Length: 365
Image 1 (spheres, rainbow, N blue to C red):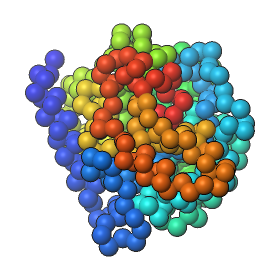
Image 2: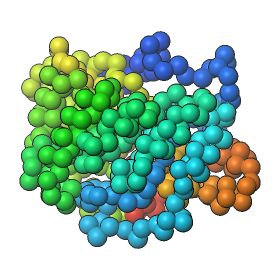
Image 3: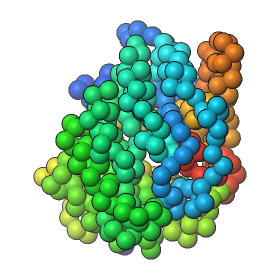
Image 4: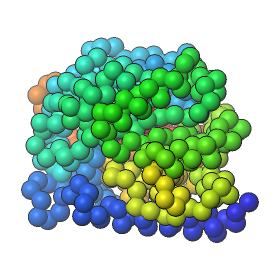
């Protein structure tokens, strides 16, 4: 086993490369003193430019770490923000400093006519980047239309490269084939970068870490390993199957040397590495072993219109009803930003530590 200090050094080196990438001139420019529009800064001096938007609480899968097998009590249609309401909230936040949005769920592609929302958001002045998180099961027939509507980048969830295991984790049939079809369609549509998110689970998919990493040798994909995040519905799993990204890097390092690199364009906290000469990269996201709250640049909008300054906090501000009453949303957004917590409490490994979330699907992960 690689000594802990080596794991720390690898993560720090990857993080330094990530920080350099954030300053890369070729990337999407960030607002500064010369950029028109406002700047949203929270009580800890962090600048918020990024909003994750959950367009639905529903999902076509029941992944073991994300949602109970029986599902949840779904929101009524009238409780969910319309596309026009989502767009209006983004129109309010863009002059305040918002530049990037990501569409999530549940599974966003189960909501009808999602490209229509993408088109609306792409026309909001100041929004320079629209991305999508999906399990890709429904992606193949929609990839071209989403790209044409304005989605720049895509993240795909995939937790096993073995068909039976993928079905068992997702608790639905024929998952792997459909996800691979979605990835092929995403490549054909010109999405770049394409990121594949793998939730690490000891005793479940830890023997596939090297196989996932090997995908990056020939394909320009960015495989990111993510530590299990505890919620009320997965506490047993998260306690028994927790595996750190440092352990994953150790397993990959036994196959070949890794070098820290500047990762692909994006808003996230991953640190990146590459096999020498590889087409893609290997990323790690460490909410449990090395939290990245100090650099948090985001807030989340739930499908029911709650603005959450922290995914795993208990604070949320209702925007839906004030919006429907025609009230000014700016003071509500400013107050939510002001009370954004310093960090999450996931390390408690409890329902309260995750801010009372039952499942990750409730806020889009």
